[in-house]
Image 1 (cartoon, rainbow, N blue to C red):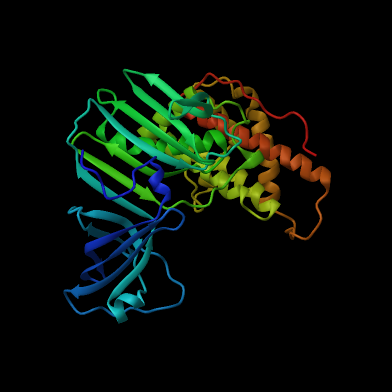
Image 2 (image 1 turned 90 degrees about the vertical axis):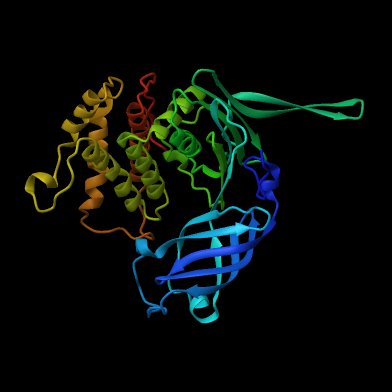
Length: 423
């Protein structure tokens, strides 16, 4: 297999800076085509940076207004194609925002940071399985992987002992083979093989991102896929991404912290997100809306955003969109639709908690959606009120976690909600 002039997923060279000479740069901007040469650098903390001198081809440049508020349009998202020296194949930087570029207009150059670059190359090996490896960021020290990894240390003829590490192994020969280990403090390296008789070729590219979704939901951390290398039989694709700041749900995590990580539940969630059904899309939105709620500075805003997830989920799954101009479309019966949810997805575990979920939803949603006044951040809130409010939010967060398990087809769970107020 041909070696890439790029860092491999899971290889420690990922953490070292690199520089590539680009023999050809090509992109479109203001209905003109630009070509040129440049330098592409990689920094593991800052991502990619492209410095290139370019020449415009085509009609004269259109006028463009600079400054002032504006929407980012789809037409502003461009693809930059590059050919590195000694690589002789295109590499792609997708979804690059190109607008109000003084450097292009006035200086015939492009200086831009790039978050993602995709490399591809023909594969000389055609395995029976779709194989790949990935590097993930955000695996904190509080997350314990279920399997042990032993690393022998030998110096000459002397054994210096062994060091224990955390890992994960899923051995299902007719389905999928997965192994991984923690590297450094917050990084996880995964290697996988997917049986071609069960998985589609498109699944091989989606699977590593689905693993990031599953890890995020199970741990309450925004785990990121930094790099993936996928062999799809005829071609090998490598994608590298810039790390972003990790967000944590903390006490609002959808699941109670369990040690070690449940790898069977992890495997089921990965398949669920790989197949990408409407239920999978809803579950992704549930998690990221929970992250958005937990990041709010105002207690009231956190309550309102967290409670709105329940109504949005039920409306989407039961196809009852909100219509402000239709009287029947403005409100839905949350209690009744929770019962329908349990019937639709054949879960009896959540039935005893539906009334409680409705009560909590009404309490924290209505007092913030229709307040008598708005609290300021500096205004005092009683400790008792905060304690009960936090208990409500934790209950609703756990309820969302069990809704995610239900939507993913898992039934082997016993709901575990906190019983005492927080102090």
